[in-house]
Amino acid sequence: MISPAPNLPDAIPDELSGRVVIVTGAGRGMGRAVAVRLAKTGASVAVNDLEPAAADETAELVISQGGTAIAVAGDISDSSFVESLVLEAVEEYGDVNILVNAAGILRRTAVFDMPEAEWDLVMNVNLKGTFLCSKTVLTSMRRSGWGRIVNFSSTAGKTTSTLGGAHYTASKHAVLGLTRHMAMEEAAHGITVNAVCPGLINTEMVQHEVDDERLKRYTDGFPIHRLGEPFEAAELVAFLASDRAAYITGQGFDISGGDLMV
View 1 (spheres, rainbow, N blue to C red):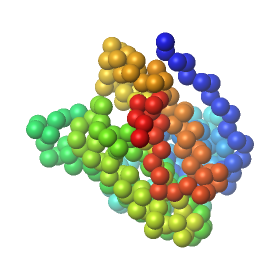
View 2 (view 1 turned 90 degrees about the horizontal axis):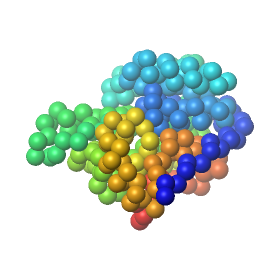
View 3 (view 1 turned 60 degrees about the vertical axis):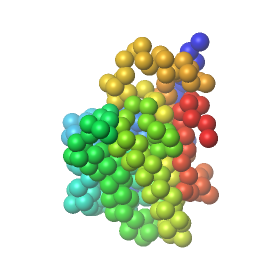
């Protein structure tokens, strides 16, 4: 029997009022869900995506629901763009308090067949982009004496990838290492750093990679017999971005329907 997805929970009003948030990879999927969810609790959101139309669409969605957002499209593996992204958010809203590194890509090529350029592409977006965005917001967060960085790893970061190749697995393991080390370095500045580790979530990327028959085989094997929904990952991010999670740092939180239990 397939378990039904729960109804979307209500956001806590004004929980993040006055906070400034950057969400990378917010043009679709979990990144978009995060941007919408954090805006509903009062945060001002800078929406980043590589695709300008996707970033614009998410910003417009946030605004249509009563939130505050700007779209800043560009490549987070480019340090000069990342500096301009953070500067634009600061100039528009004030110091950046929350960063959600949701941007990521997946490729399936086996190591034997993998071009060096493909390895570099996946590592640059998934790992280098997370590093660059995190490093660049630290000045703003330290100035405020309060910050939340939430990185997107994956259950692949604790085992191997169901859908992606070795470069995806390696990048997501590395994101967890980066998360732990930054958490240790930045705690004294009032900044926490955590990661979410989704399993199979009902996003465009998963739908593109897996046909219905294969998806059913996967979900039949999960203790909770369904895909996760983007808003469920966004709820976890919203908690980690809030004062409710003030004593949590350096952790990687699985959200996988029980597919991974360690």
